[in-house]
Image (cartoon, rainbow, N blue to C red; front, side, top):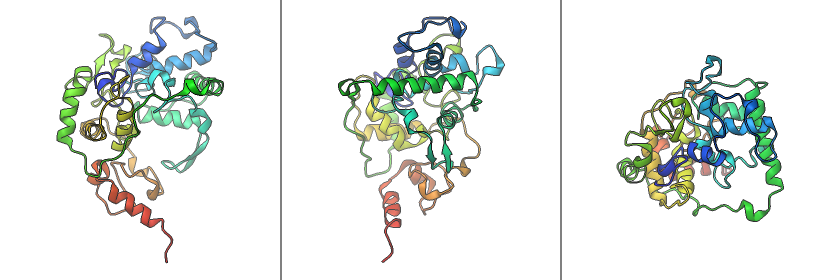
Length: 320
């Protein structure tokens, strides 16, 4: 995916962009410089500005290499902007513009009334392969403030500025994913940026600086409990954004390469069997059981998905 940069950057997936987030936001100061000394761009206040930096350059503040051990909340070296392009400012897939307006809401994964703080911590523990932030911590308060700022800014933005520049939405192929073809797509469209081993392109010699092109698998990537570890979720993102600025992958390419990426080794999250207490609400592409249907883990992971969809559709029909 040649263009992907930011994220899955040209390639794919987690797409996303630390790069995009970092470039769009800019690095006006050194990573170790106190937040209070950082420039406040636009009309954001200092707290909102810190929240944006946390999302755009997460590894520099919360990653495993930061100087203060108490601030090492992540085992991965991704940034939130690895998936939320431009620190969530870009319209379309995984935009954060109106994220805060959707909470609180009932989460099928936990079967609880989830707050925006819960959602952020879900990402911290899954997508960032880390641990939860305290709800009253400076970092949580700042990220929530930034999301609130985005929502207020979105409410004042005209429709023309919210226009989404993405290809037609992904349509699931009526077959199982082809990992061999996915490997070829990765080699041809992704490896140039994310590396032949999917390990990404570091922004600097010191990994505390994060990645220009994020790692798509391995110890620095998201764990197997993350949303991006679901093939259909990943394929929708890949089809919409890859390569960045010139998304041109077909449905079949996006499907196969997403399956290939998610077949590669990555950190494991304990306790996944507790997700989705109501098994009937578990997404059909969740690659771990238990399920409320007779289909295998293999089919839930790589498809074909149409038979699983049909099973649940028929289960919802009233008995005659």
